[in-house]
Length: 98
Image 1 (cartoon, rainbow, N blue to C red):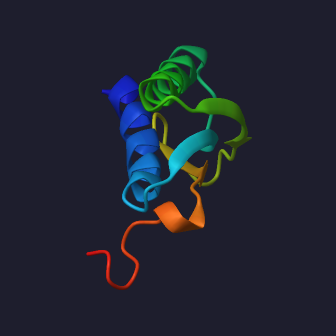
Image 2: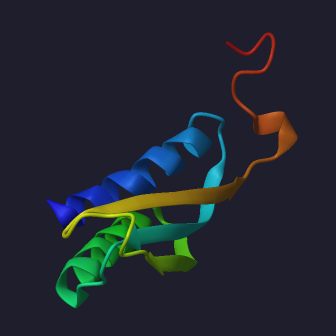
């Protein structure tokens, strides 16, 4: 399950670009948990990397936070964003193009 969460995180961000006609360029992630567990963290990041491969965008960095007082054991939060590019004339959803 944890691998697929990473793939879905990238997919939701990249989808916001694609519906505008943009090409995904890169992705950055944020992983926060109460206590870093190597196996769990690696599985999530592997999923994020797989999502980037599927989306043809680079995973260029991210942030990891360990906050013991904020999360119960085994819980975590993920966030991320992607950046893309499109020529202005190729933007989807402009007036008169829908």
